[in-house]
Structures are given as structure tokens and as C-alpha cells.
Amino acid sequence: MSNSKIYIKLGLNGRTGQNQGYPKVLSLLSSRLQKHVEKNEKLLQTTQTKDVPTIFHGSRAPSLTIQQYIDRIFKYSRCSPSCFVVANIYMDRLIQSESIVLTSLNVHRLLITSIMLATKFIDEAFFNNAYYAKVGGISRAEMNRLEMKFLFGIDFQLYVNLFTFKEYCLELMGEGSEDEVQIQNAVHGSCGIIEKRSKKNDDSTYPTIEIEIN
Image (tube, rainbow, N blue to C red; front, side):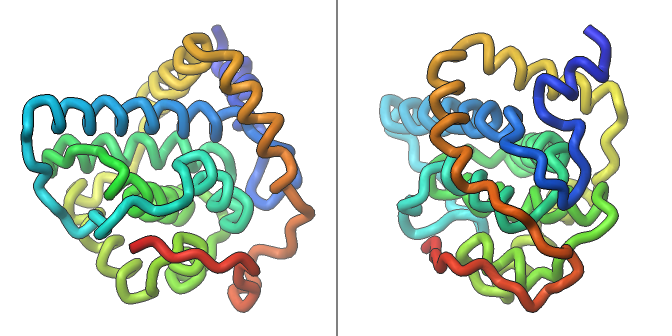
């Protein structure tokens, strides 16, 4: 399959800030991460292994599901859909380098940090850290700490070559073929969050929905 067909199927053909509908990559990524979280937590429980807390761990799992959190980030960050693929790559790099076990206690902070970094690296425009902190439900100070820890954790390796990007796209598409019915329901159920977006350089416009992850 050609690159262009892959990108169209995942909804990656839109540009930053466009009212492009709901990209399929969002539901595929959330499904993939949810399965990893459930698998890891089950393994920790059955082996009676204690998870090692990191700076990305919260005191309890947030009330927002992974799908809801990704939808929220997409709605308010106004980043290009490709950022979610790149963020997935960044997360894997950090998890491998720092031996982090992905669970419901750390997945949200890993998501907001990796998506913010991806947006800064590949998009033409982006918000400041205070804005992403507001979107993610954390403080600006914590957002700054998470960003630095993440960058040092991946040794500032932010570049993603085309081959790696395509491989991750194909993996996400495979996720869709495994659970097509549930994913289609998630897509239709989430379409209501999309709204007309304002100019991206206005950092003073914060989300109207307040959340907090602990």
C-alpha cells in the first residue's frame, strides 16, 4: 500500500488547525494504548510485581479514559493528526530507554508530554507549555518537569524517519483490523467534540472544560 493511501486511511492528510473531522488515528491509538495498559496491569497483578513509580505516575488513575483524553488533546491542542503517530513513537522510545511499564497511572502524562513534544517538533505552530498543561489537567510547573524528563529520557532523539513513521502507521492500521466494530463505534461516538477552531497563535484562549489528573 502506498504512503498516501495509508495516510488517508488514518486521517493524516489534514494540516494543523484545519477543521478536518475526526481522524481515525485517534481511536486506533487509544485502542492500542488501552490494550497495552490492560495487559501490563494484568501481568503486574498475576506476577505480584510492584510497579516502579516515575515522575509520570499519578497517585490514582484519572477519571478520563485514554480515548477521552486523546479526544480532548486533539480538540484543544489543534495539532496535526500526524503528531499522534509521532507521539506514539516517542512514548515507545521513552518506555524502552527508561524501562517504564505503561499503566493507567502514567499513560495520561506520557500522552500529553509526547504529543506536546511532537507538536513542537513537526507542526508549524504550537502553544506554550502553560496551555498544554491546562489541556492535560496538570500545572505548568509539572508540565515543564515532564518535558525535560522526557527529553533527557529519549536523549533528545525527536527526529523520526519516514520508514519508522510508516511502520507505526501500519501497526495502527493493524490495530483497526483486529477490532473494527468497536473502533467504528468510538469514532461515531466522539465526532461531537469537533468544533470550528480559532487561530493557533492565541495562547490566551484556554479550554473551557476544567480537568485535573492526580
